[in-house]
Image 1 (cartoon, rainbow, N blue to C red):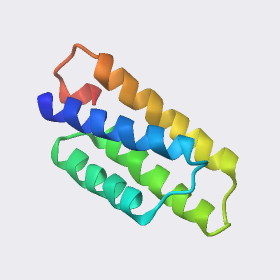
Image 2 (cartoon, rainbow, N blue to C red):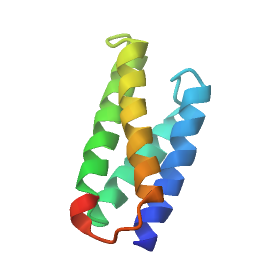
Image 3 (cartoon, one colour):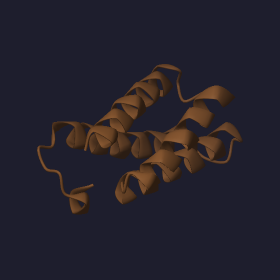
Length: 97
C-alpha cells in the first residue's frame, strides 16, 4: 500500500500543477503522467490507470485544439477525486484501488 500512496502523492502534485497552468502541459509533465500511469499498472491500480490514461488522452486532444477545457476539467476532477479517496483510504485491498 505504501507504493500506491506514494504514486498518488506524486500524481496529486502533477495534477495540481496542471490546474494552475490552465491545462497547458509541457512535455516533461506529460512524461511524468505517462510514467505514473505505467507504475500504477504495476501497483495494481486498474481504475487509476484508466483515469490517468483518459486524462492524458484528453489533455493531448485539448493541446491539439480537438477538445475543450470542460472535457479536460471533467477528467481532471475525476482523477483528483480518485487520488484524494486513495490517500484517505484505510483499506489495503486491491479491489478498492
